[in-house]
Length: 118
Image 1 (cartoon, one colour):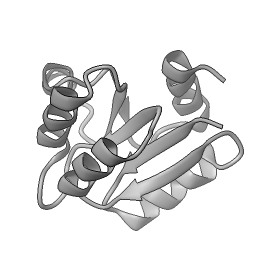
Image 2: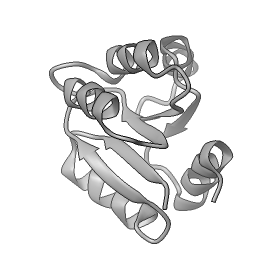
Image 3: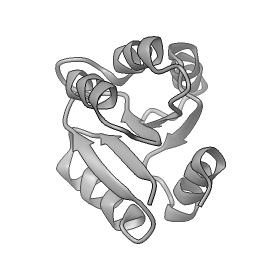
Image 4: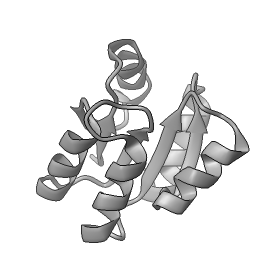
């Protein structure tokens, strides 16, 4: 089963993601960007779902750090900021795709599949 790192500081958003993913994937949670970087570099994840607004280190900085050591690890930005400028910043930081919150389960699963398959 594919393994996902969910970088999300908000408990209710994390619970929603677990509800969407639990039938299809294994996952672990990072509660801030720094934790996400440390976990990504130690763990064997197939993809990262990265919240952008997080404490300690935001998702953009965390994405840049992860991509330096793991350039092939797909990262999907997951954020309530749905403006084109936010999408642009996420892609410039190294994200492979972008989902706006609240995310639909269908679109979330479809986007993940695009990078990791079934």
